[in-house]
Length: 613
Image (cartoon, rainbow, N blue to C red; front, side, top):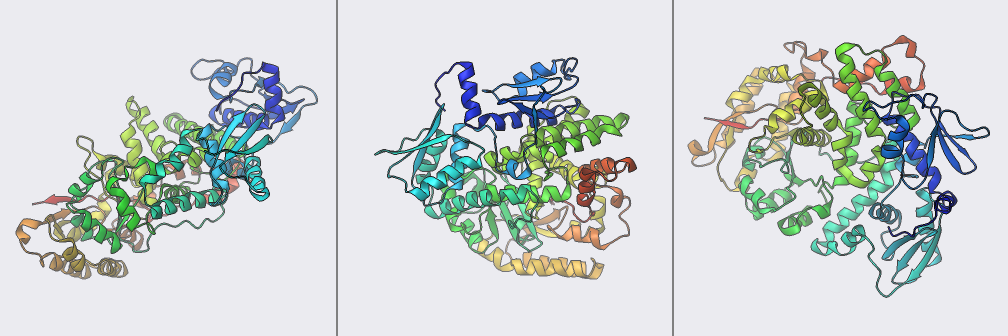
């Protein structure tokens, strides 16, 4: 944003006058509270337009890297442009300010935004038919420029949008023959849109608006209607940004619904790896066997080749905002500490409880968890609002697992492990099996299996054991590896039939006779194709379908060994926090106990589809 240099006192007076100061002070205080949980703070205070954070041991406070806390706060934490003083005691007559509420956090109230983010936040609050406009900022006002004059209602809507961000600043409205596109975000929205079909843009815009309309309920734990999953119970997720997929016929013979996340680059190689043509993919989309998932913002993808397929499935494509909502809801259900719908001072109380009763080996990993949660909570709502689904790299299980692996091995954080973990979380949000792709020398399957174990509590060493009870399925099910016409494959392996067969297995509790009949039915369809000796091989497969094996675990008690004793890491931490009788009655621990539920049937499974001669 352009700005005019002002003397320090005048600049601080303007920041105070126009409402930036309080929001910046709250953000700075709440960051400090969560990122530095080893120190005690006595709140945020205000007197005569200046803001103070009280820390009784500020004189001796040293961070883990040896930096005095006050210096660390000024260099790495405090929002620039306005001074917030870190002092031992608040000045006489000062007033203590509360932390931002959950609702204010969800609306980014007081959060510092760059030009792109600020423009998008304002635009999302305005009606879709609002005239094109740009925003320019000056030390004392915001200037909205549009091609035609705004009426009184539109001016009111713009002013309300500004106020919702916690700002009390003068606004000016003017017109120009050509609206200046002052920043990259506006350029993307107005100029980059020409590469995409109107139907795709409409779905994108609708998804953006739904995110804005629902994020208060999402971050305040009010039920949010954003279920993007199909109720087939036999779905898989293939994230092609991680590597190359296999022949799509492998998946069509077993899964009713196939979710595919396309690569960010050229779309054509994806079709070659799937061994289908563009026309085949259109058929699969029209038959609702394939759904495209976009974890990144639409404008980050290459429209060539992808645009026509998105237009075809515009009514069912999963945009990154929808995926973000579903991921937050699913992750919170599995781990109540991941996205707690409480204010930042209450979150700090959780951090204080997290390390108190830890001992020796546990302490190391609980401290990693505490530090991760604190850093995550300090920017949770803002990051998801500006980044969408990929914000999960920093806020979901992805970074937490990578931090723990790094601590155990002494190696740097593994970005591929982080992205694989996030992809597994997306798969869980879709209620689908995660199908690893081929990433060359990297073992995506091993990383994804570790991630699933971490998220759901199924230990690596026992991960396959319960599944081997279904020996017939693993050893005898045939798989296609040929180029049979897609329409023939669809006719032989209809989604309804796959769902019906899987339901039979679940209802009969995987009785051996019924299981054998299931295999016979599937293999009979495979044998309908010519050149079967060349095209059919045995499948070594972990987790036949998205709801199939979890149903097996839930429906049987014998032979599962110690599986029921395993719980997700997040639930383990939550139980450690709430285990101490001395902590009973705390509003924070009472909330956590109410949310801390887990059953072993809520398991994410990784599908191995390796062919065996």
